[in-house]
Image (cartoon, rainbow, N blue to C red; front, side, top):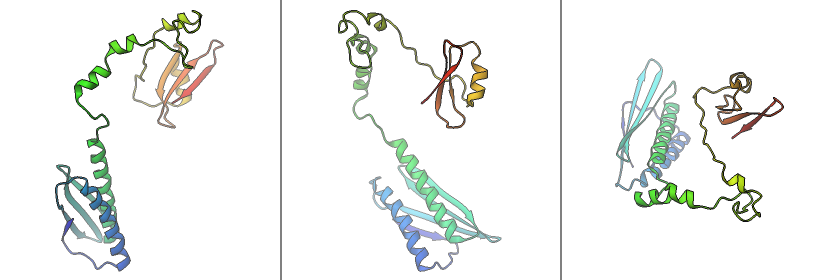
Length: 197
């Protein structure tokens, strides 16, 4: 990776230079996955009233990625700008990754609703519900499963969820403490069960 510095650069201690080179080497490894030859990074250094500004710009996966940081120390500003640049590159790389490989038509065939309806219903322990139990569990095979997503994006605490549930048998919400989905279920005795995902 070719690095061009613009602006006044302070003299760095050899340990600091080694640390900065290590961080830039990680970015170089990320750039090797792009496969488009040698890359050019532009480092712009500015100094204004005891505040150093480091801005690193490069092109990665056909996107311009910029890492920028302000600090009283130029070395700290450079290191944190490199870290921000690396985080942006990782985010961009993860967006580009596709878990599903292969033509789109195969996805639609595999996910067709006909194939789901033709499957034989089974219980959680693998018993065939139609004929594997002598007809005892056949009523369970006729029940439907409904997918429920939380209606609001606003997270609630457990106490707020108890107040909001009202007369409904259940409430699916996002827990404000953990940030995870939770389901508050009203039992027959009037108490609640809390299921956290």
